[in-house]
Image (cartoon, rainbow, N blue to C red; front, top):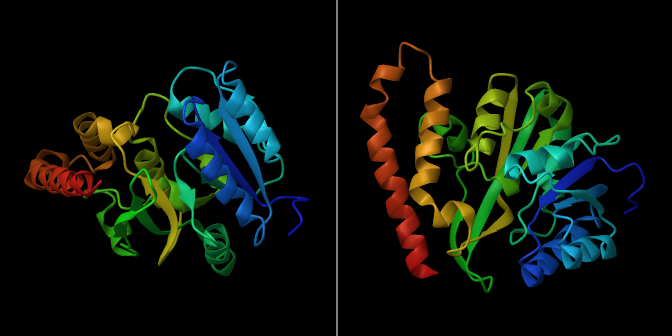
Length: 258
């Protein structure tokens, strides 16, 4: 498919220290061009010369990392927008499944009032073996304000106009910036989903959210609390601690498989 006038902006922030997995990630992004038109923007430090060169080999645009956190890096990528309609994010060791972006784009095209589409997500080990599969579907939308965030950032597509209206990603957040954005977007419009896996999240000890599980959980709880109605906030502990325990238990099981 021609990449002229791309509809999808894929933002990939990286420190440039995972070259082999980055190469595999870029290959899965390139493969999406068989079905959709997209433009890749890689955000990386100036010194990450190998990663920057690799992105250019795959036809990507390279933006300098502002070095003020991952949310700021993603925002820099979004601000490189030209005429694209949709935003998709990809970590430097995560993968798109074949036809994944096409499925997400088709969902939004079929529902013009929808502003977010998302699909299932495979959790894979460093070698690519599937450890678990998340296919929450519509349940993820119900759980979003108070339960675990089951909408995978690398498996979601957002209308860029709406993402810009909410101010993109909160740069004060390190782990739950996608949760915060989804909660803001949920107040603006409709979400649509498929249970079919559209992406894969690589589960390994060096992953930011895996290696810092407690910090990630606490930040997510703080984000959800500030989005709750004031009258409900005093009662959040009724479900907050069970959700924290359940999430930690699930993460431990997946880590054990990895």
